[in-house]
Image 1 (cartoon, rainbow, N blue to C red):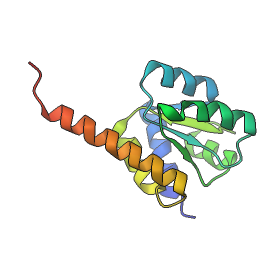
Image 2: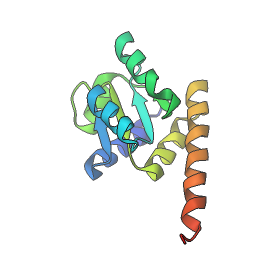
Image 3: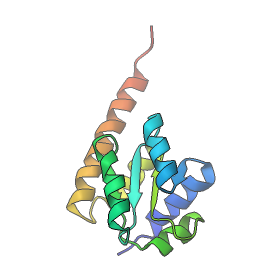
Length: 128
């Protein structure tokens, strides 16, 4: 599977300061309401997977087709299993690239695109 563009976008998000790495930082971002998408490595443990899936009602969770080492090397955090992004444009771009990898990712990508459309519509309206 070609994951280089996805990993490149995640690395770019990290350099822009829009990416949180690790369970605690991801949880804090979700609770603050700033999280747009969560990305989970395929070799994540059961406990981590359960903790992350608790947030699925609020934020779409994508299953990455790469290992923790590959994900960690791409974003500059060795052994990173889970990361989250706070930028809606970047989340939509990543969702589009990951939509074809699995049915779960396709559903999550649909949720991201709906949310992006709502945000774009709201930006077009003038505040009174």
